[in-house]
Image (cartoon, rainbow, N blue to C red; front, side, top):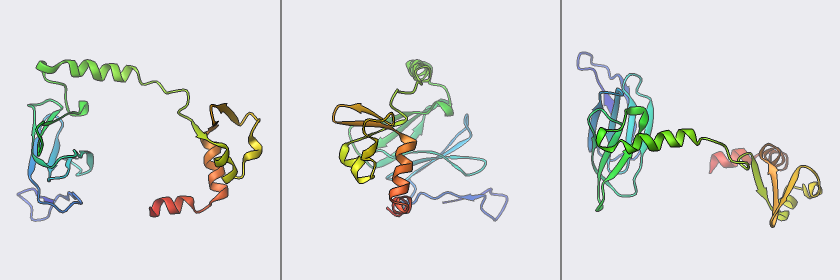
Length: 175
């Protein structure tokens, strides 16, 4: 999709939906200065000035239309199912007065932004350690015993994987 300024013959930027379906809806969100486009598979929200992708919404059902709620961050999608899709994006605007509970929910989520104890660890089993040729680490401080396996620091695990399969990242990119 090409975006033009009517005063110039050259497009400002190209917006790519990737699915190659016809665009069903184009909306301009004044408060956040975002452009909202939708085909039958995905809703994409673009920065109006740069044309960079801000975010996208991909519901399970096909999309018929998209509507915003005034100057709020609330977005409704008419879908090929019984229920409408309702999405709240706080970066695009506040919640409307009639659903102020959304503001409270987002504030609670922001406050509880703590990390879990095991976020920086990888769970591995004894067979995983054998595959990584690291079974000699059992009983050391590198592994913490837990149920039927061990917790290992994520960085140490990634180093072991890189040493044992130097082309793992290339395979991952290819997949």
